[in-house]
Image 1 (cartoon, rainbow, N blue to C red):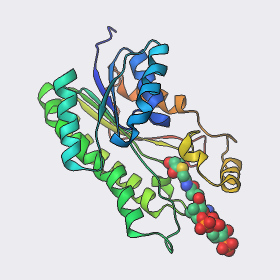
Image 2 (image 1 turned 135 degrees about the vertical axis):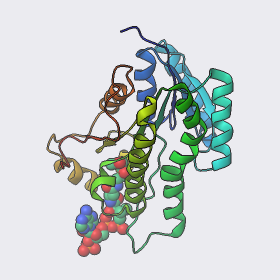
Image 3 (image 1 turned 30 degrees about the vertical axis):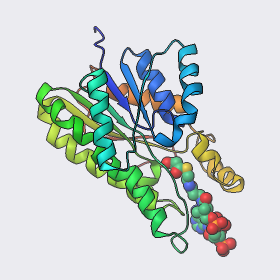
Image 4 (image 1 turned 45 degrees about the vertical axis):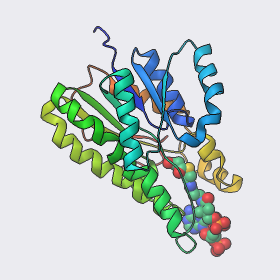
Length: 249
Ligand code: CAA
């Protein structure tokens, strides 16, 4: 099948999983644009240099996905500079882990805003164009912990579970218009986010994974590439687990 160059946006595109998703989709022939939070500006030079060394030319646009206004501005900038968006990977996410007893409203709000509200804010500006053009691929990066809950993650688990509700609804609204909308639920992936878990807890988590290791970001990117592909047009509304066997349902 001839590869069409699809305009592809990855939010959280310079993060641990996002970077590798950008690299994979760029190698697959897409024009990839990584969005990043304005506070990450100082990482840009080094990040861009690393991608260039790999022979990849990835576009960059800043924006705060937890803000409706800034997300709309960011996606307008993307579409003015690069063209209409065909593929959207909602990958931006944060953790603010704490037990319910100690969790502050600010920790709840920060995670709901960045991980859940963002998905509506970023998708909204590209959705109508996808409907009109009759093509779209939306891939929401959720989490194992949205499927089964996790001690210390009431905020994160709620947001990640909410993402899949959004996926299933958009899948129905886009199904007759050539748009597929799917969720990927990674388990524990080797990134700065999981490096931040206390060592004893991290070791206990890895010990409980049937594969006895965390995922590599490449293994998440491979699932994204599968769902983003031109000829993968019949899976929609799915929640694909990439978790080393840690949770099966
Ligand atoms: N189930 C049941 N009880 C548990 C438990 C669990 N999973 N984890 C801890 N407890 C118990 C402890 O044994 C302890 O009991 P006692 O008071 O009787 O001794 C009590 O709960 C308090 O535990 P902590 O010492 O861990 O409490 P803390 O306040 O120091 O830390 C926490 C709380 C920050 C939430 C910490 O438990 C933690 O970091 N947990 C891991 C959370 C996690 O998995 N985060 C994933 C981040 S990566 C990610 O989110 C990516 C992804 O999508 C997978």
